[in-house]
Image (cartoon, rainbow over all chains, first blue to last red; front, top):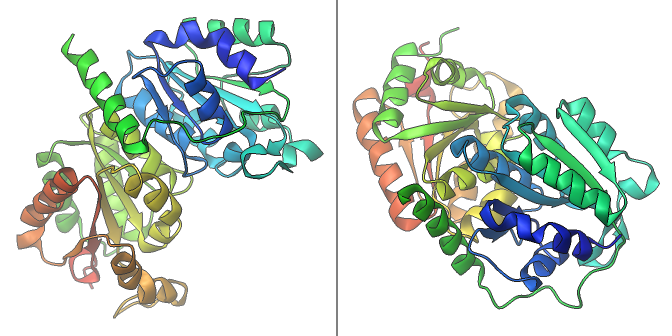
Length: 190
Length: 170
């Protein structure tokens, strides 16, 4: 299963969500499918995409929030699982693309390649719904169910360690940030 | 425990007057009253963290959502947050109001706090983070308001160091 195919499968459903991605391949691939003002790419600060999603979902309880996390990023901030589980916002969907690799910095294997079980960690942290998927159709179904549901969900999507040729997009980081905030403020005025 | 309840109340009320509605925190002795007040106040969302750096992401999310927030932490928590501050708040121009208890300075009895005290201000200066002190009750409200104003206008982290003089009644 390729992360790009997963993103493509769920892309139509993201139109009305607030989306936060991690850096590198995940950001570049979502961007390549077509940037939207409701997408925020956290191009550094590894580990904090899930924390950002938590902040958004607690402050905007009527808005669906999707975080596209990765194994390397989540392993840097495992405590985030316990904090998310503590507040368990009903409007937060946490997707972890687990390619068992720090792909964007040269493909070094992460601990999930040697047996660390992110599904087990997330469940033990107290995330109410946790599942692992290995096929695009299963990913699409799980993500749709989580988006339509009312329970904090972590989806571990096992993907191949393959990504785009480059990671730099034509969207400046600061432009992305202002556009994202402006988008959210425009929702409030509607 | 001689943590000043009076000073904690003044700080908490000043934060609320600045429309701060989300506080992230990791408990430390000087912050116990502030955290309890945040927990008991229905107008404030308290997010108890596992590690202080998470608070940078949570405050960024709150900022995107249009909610004003502040981070409560010890200076060692600030040390643990530095990459988040640089690689998120500075990189993306996120306003952060950081209230940091300034442990390990004159009067410190806990040996384990003393190294953090040595490096806190040097790091704040090195990172280009504007900072000031909360050291007496009569200037707390105004200084918090000014720090919040600067964070919002400059879109960057601003720090207030909570001193022993204000927080500890002994």
